[in-house]
Image 1 (cartoon, rainbow, N blue to C red):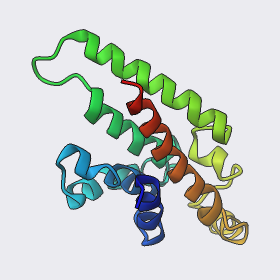
Image 2 (image 1 turned 135 degrees about the vertical axis):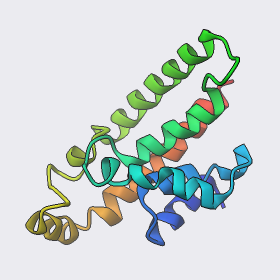
Image 3 (image 1 turned 45 degrees about the vertical axis):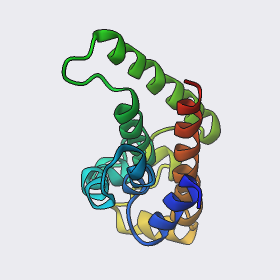
Length: 148
């Protein structure tokens, strides 16, 4: 199973977008799936269902941070390189999806408003748009990491 397939399966099981993306990379970084699910939990739905930055995006940025991030004892160029990778990710994600903001991706609808949530469900956006964002986030992160 590919990482993007694993992420979509996790999302279908009820884990949020951020959890699904980060957890699909757990083995690459020697992290348990449970730790990844916990770390990313608060980022789903655009950060705690606030519909800010898409959770699939934040999950992928956690992955890029694990791969490239500046840690204790590292030099400043590592941080700058991570920011470059982050910019590359945002550009690719926006190109595929038009935005990296959860509310925009869900057609401006507010998932915390009962009427809007009903409309999101009627339009099947969680099963179409969100699945695509999860899949795209994994694929883009993989592509960025392949260029090293």
